[in-house]
Length: 348
View 1 (tube, rainbow, N blue to C red):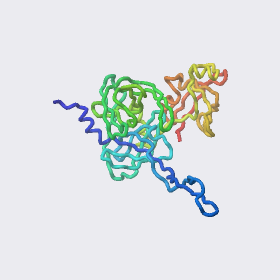
View 2 (cartoon, rainbow, N blue to C red):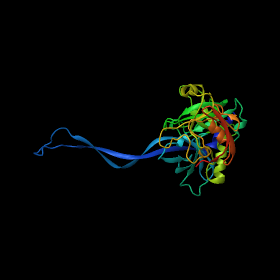
View 3 (cartoon, rainbow, N blue to C red):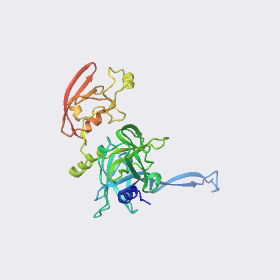
View 4 (tube, one colour):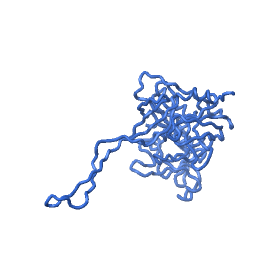
């Protein structure tokens, strides 16, 4: 009986795949009862419940998957897997050993994040080889590995069902919603906990990072193309952090619905708008956008002569640039059109 090539791929790659456990320290509360007494020291009435804090306890609040991309303990995963603030991250390797981890970088545009193991000095971990997601073909065999539904290192297979898909993904633990574009669709089973794990080709190379499922549908899963993460890894090797260009505006993408809601003269572009909270200003103070005088209510119509719309959102156009690039933007303020240039700075 011939052995499936998938078996060899799994054996080769499984030691590089990890589980990520998210924990949070919360007050440990003990319940006790206070018995009232009358003036003759006789029990009086029902005991009154009281609560007392007795230290702190660590509780498991979430998790996902990841995989080693550098032998010194650098792990690639999804940003939404590690998006909850003030928590502790534990990485469980294939040999069941546990390591505390810290976040090195988060890339919100492509839902990519990088972790580093903190207590693994001197150890060398097996890494996965990164493929080229630009060369994927429909129908190509793929293998998904991850910590699905709490089961460590679950394997599923399928094919590339679609390319360059666009979806709206909701992260249940954090409540955040993200627009994901240019992603890979596959019928390989991707379940809760798979997020951050590798999507492999038949040669065992990573061609995607498992990211989302369609609730209520069967055989529809999505993965971020691995090429989206390569720049982040290159930045990490060169600079020790992700280098991201920054304009400094908060905006909503204009479409026909937004045009009607805000009575706008156009149905495309990026409307600079204030968000809730004390730091939710539409134009970030001291940013490149502030330096050239952009204001809340302005609509950025074009970025380097590319029309801003749902297929070309502003944040993706910025992300494709480099820090220090001077770009041309076309602005609509009221009924006046203007064109200006701005130098992109590094996001801090």
